[in-house]
Length: 279
Image (cartoon, rainbow, N blue to C red; front, top):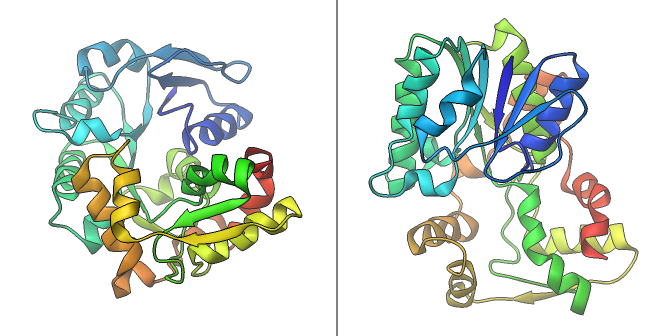
């Protein structure tokens, strides 16, 4: 049995499907009830309450662990999940971490994630750690404005980053869960090229077959919008990366190619597959 947390999200959903199609028994875990692929058991659990997560681990031999933002809040103990998994007989954990653990290690959220990584290394279980950069699916923040005004508003319109398609993260996670060769690996996951927010708007326009205007935001305007759903510190961390990426954050990693035997998908592929969200 393989347990997938965050199973209804942009990574967990395709990962659950891939594991089920590979013939594995899967338990999909999310905070809210949701449909699951045929043959997949779904369970509702909140990882901020590790004791309540234990029933999902019954009989599990592997775990994909995705921690939501509130598990990095003051007083949270996400490393407890690692201990409970080990005590429950889980043999392998694939952790979705963050590129920032290496590129910007001193932020509060990065320190918390490093502690989870360290707990996993010390757990006695087999493990692999995935450190993606920015997600292509973050462009869904623009879906409403594209649908209603055919416009994208973002800061730092001409600063490019090698953002990654979540479907590629899911394929890498599946490989790490199923193949012993990836045990003990720490993988930095990026897309194949640098793409700017303005370039993303152009790719969405191409997928729609309709022009999309790009409107520049100031950093302050962007932060005000982001803090409606993110802690201010995390918004600032994100804006630091978007506006002034360091050389490590600009690097296109070879790790997707190494694991999957193919190049990562470009943003245009993600936009084409998700065009319906912007129509």
